[in-house]
Length: 218
Image (tube, rainbow, N blue to C red; front, side, top):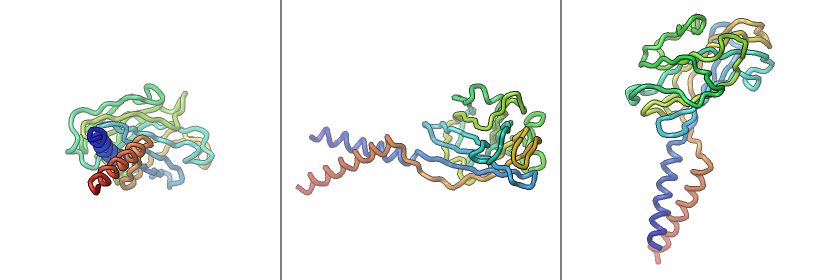
């Protein structure tokens, strides 16, 4: 019985640690160069230690009536760059190979990455991390994409209340009949998002604490 209680207690501790580390940050973006009216959304989700899934969306769910729009580049700041160490790496790209190039360094990343992959006119510079994505306006158009970003010390909390940027090319639909937009936004405050498995572990852990307290009273 004592061994069982120890296992339950350890499980509870693991569950609470998992709940504390699981988080999601959502950053709404809006066109900063054409008077607004075109939107994007970035989501940052903890997937494992030092790894965050980055998802970008300009599809019809974000922009009603859009028919095409290619996400060419993404820019990010980190809340505490000094907490990060080592290089940045990309994996699990969807669609595969969507990331063409990456740039990483505190306040060292320009708003101009390559050719028309820029935030010119948005008045934003000195970023910490950026990626070139997409196919530069065709033949394929990527309205949604995602990838895992791994840096030692990284978590979704690094994107809370921080600026992000997006370059979108060849927009069609709504009031945008071709052209480009440079979108800027700021991440929402940190919100903990328990995973189903963590909730189950927490329930089991609380049960274990209840057993321990009952036995002590006896």
